[in-house]
Image (cartoon, rainbow, N blue to C red):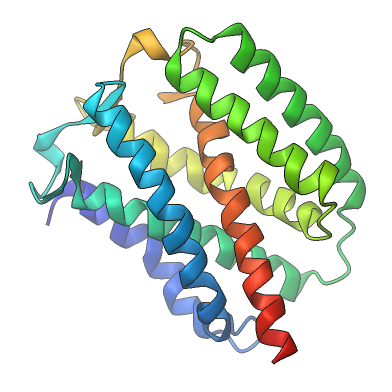
Length: 229
């Protein structure tokens, strides 16, 4: 098994096993979750494929199984299912174990700050494809979900995003070369700003946010349909 595959396996193992926890019973929401993962995951795989072809980022074959779908290694494709699964699981755990958690103000301030940061960085770095696309898209998604649609779950989403930041540092840190001689996933310096969190390009914060927010939106939509039935 490739090193990247081990990372994927270890990322999903805990959330999958604990999906059957009696208090969370996450498995009962799979009908809402999997369509959300597949729909948004497909869009991001198209984005991933395009940026890979353009050499904005790429993958080190040393750490891969050498099974490809288009230009993307199988492990990368699985990443877009495994990481969101784990994040939505964290979301449901927080709601189950902290039902009275006050998140409205946090969500409000976060939405303003993140939108402003995304627009500022994106517009200032229009020559950097990754910076501009990730930052601007994340800002427009926040405007759409929070400021226009006023979704009630946004505060809990923000808490989840902040809690998931710590496993994000571990997983993305390993992928970007924190413990290996060479990064598993590399980035073209021509299309990122340059600052990194350990080895993680700062743009990854906005990219992952852009992936997760619409997944949560669809997930809550499908859940509401399930509850009506």
